[in-house]
Image (tube, rainbow, N blue to C red):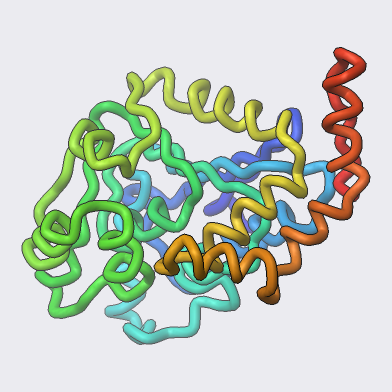
Amino acid sequence: MTEEVLTVVHEGVLTITLNRPKANAINVPTSLALYAALSRLQNDPSLRVAIITGSGRFFSAGWDLTAATQGEAIDANHGPGGFAGLTEFHSLSKPVIAAVNGLAIGGGFELALAADLMVVAEHAEFALSEVNLGMIPDSGGVLRLPRRVPRAVATELLMTGRRMGAQEALRWGLANQVVAADQLLDAAQALAQQLVKAAPLALAAIKEVLRETEGQTVQQAYDTMRHGTLTAYPAMLASSDAREGPLAFSEKRAPHWRGV
């Protein structure tokens, strides 16, 4: 892990901070470092949630164009997690919160879109500006944004590259919360602690069901859940945690999740 990607653990939450002044732009080594941090989240049973944020004025300006001028190809291999270590980390079973502290441009917006939840500073702005650079946002932006906001809005953002403010992101349901800048990490940590209290296998099952039933009808989704090839969902149903939850409720005590 380099100093360009900082990690701190507190009460089961792994906070990952992009620290590449001045714009937190992402090249291949940074993507690999982010993936390493997220793999730590996945593989360490004591870690339950990650928060991704940036230092300074930017959440992230996206792809490092300086690296591009130095020979990093537009289609460079950013590793098993894809660009920024998360955009193609489809098997990640633990929740990620994007704490968007400032500008999230291009791949920075795509990184935020790849998170499960988003807490946004009130001055933050988002844009998918690749069209103005002769490219498209193919690290998830062109795929995820139309599934998160009305198609006309997504098409406008994709085709014009215009900036969207925090309140507009909240209005379209992209952001879960908009808070003052000095409250951002506290708000993200408070949200993370709510997730830490939840059953880990249930969270993994929710992520799996949401992912695997995307675009299906309700009937098709039921069939996927009941007769498909899901793994986290049936593991949750058969777990000791699924027995512990009702037992703890009946005994009027906090549940003790074991993750098995």
